[in-house]
Length: 347
Ligand code: SF4
Ligand code: SF4
Image (cartoon, rainbow, N blue to C red; front, side, top):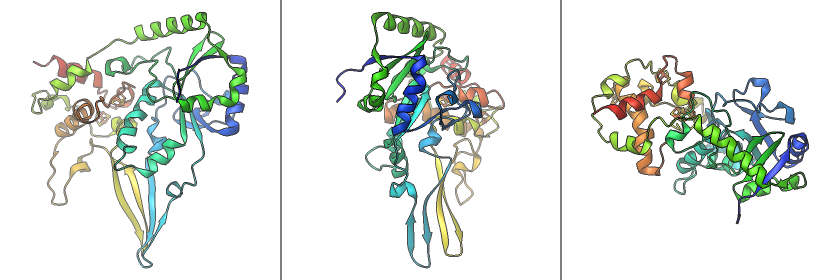
């Protein structure tokens, strides 16, 4: 067990060596300069990492829960089922996700509650999760669309991370959060020194400034109570400009709905899992033609209620980490912060 979280320092000029030592044991993924930090991609050299990015467009969930994946292959004539590599553990090498924003690290701790619970446990997610360490990068310059501090997260949140990095002047302040984090840096220990009082003070000052740039927009605790009114009048208007495109849920790091389909040619087939979205009209369409969520009003209500009312009741957490992706990419500028404010202000 990790008795204490350690505060260590790494000079920036040693980062290249640090990266090389870690990559002898791990495959490293991170926000890469080559794809404009769109998603987490394999990093082969330290200078490929984009340190100055705000956040990736695609969230981290696709690493553990891909948009489409084959669960297994089958042959109905031979009555056979063939496992995929994930099931047979062939992909079980150790990975590091490097440079994860604290909101995304926290989102993985939520997905763990859904997929990595004891009963039932999702084999596909769990295999990938167990072989991956998360190294976060504290946000010293949050984007204008970030609202993590309104939902119990923050620019230096440690939840979900094994290690967290803070970028100081000419050096990195590295805090080990879990025993796995300690093991991750073992091979590079010789490059690290204990943080001094001055290092700690510089880090505290840096994060104080970052926190002060993030205004608390609403109180997610009060919001949960407010949402207990399922038939509140605001549901009749909040959805009006929504197109039902589903981008908000696809990019959201905590949304995790999926559909299962079979693709069959003659007797051979495969069972596929694909992301789905509660914002789609077909999501709840019954075979009879009846749809219990017939309009965008019911679908928008489901999205908001799931995140801010049902999830806190079942999991003790609001399933929003304030990353702002849904704010940035909604084609009609639906801003979830305005939706929340409107709900809070409704009498
Ligand atoms: S991204 Fe915007 S328009 Fe698309 S489903 Fe979400 S709220 Fe509606
Ligand atoms: S609801 Fe929006 S802000 Fe909240 S976690 Fe999902 S994408 Fe991020």
